[in-house]
Image 1 (cartoon, rainbow over the protein chains, first blue to last red):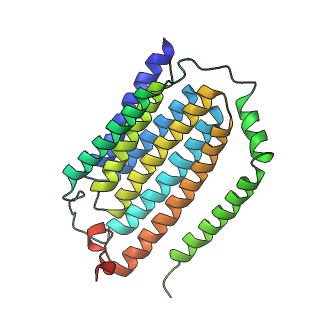
Image 2 (cartoon, each protein chain N blue to C red):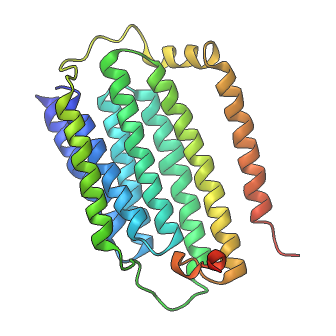
Image 3 (spheres, helix red, strand yellow):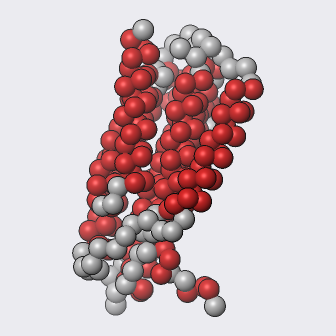
Length: 163
Length: 99
């Protein structure tokens, strides 16, 4: 029972803040709502017994991305001065496409049998993730390190001071 | 509680993110929508991993989170560079390739 209540609270928070992210007029408010949505996702991860992923989510997403986005907004908004409308003319089309996609996903979910109960996880999940990352998935892990290095170098190259 | 509510929640968040990507004019707003969509995918991965008791899904989630962070950092660097060159970050003003 507590799981249902927790899920309902998290789902309402997540959907509400996601709507606020896409609908709010002020981009800065949108970022703050995104922070709430990402924190709510971390809560969903906790509900799914993935404590490690919840911590990663909070550290990388809610900590890292929000900081970078706020910084980018401060850099690009202040110099424009005037406030422009934040949405384009395609609200109807966007809503229609999202609704159609949602209906399609709903249809797929409804037509396939899904597990109704969760099986017991063997042992410590964080330990299992760590072992999998450093044994079976060690090559993707190393590639990820190369990707992040390349991304960091690229970002620094793009954002270098003008000479 | 079954797997279905989690999938539904993730589908809703994904579609809201898609709506944001389609309707935002500001490039940073579009990036925020993409973050929402990635987030929904992560919920899906973790939910399936938990309900099938296969840890691989959670490992993939670690990877997707890292890739999303890299993507966001690079995307925002490109936005800042765009702003420097064109003095705007509105997607409908960035029509350099339109001919």
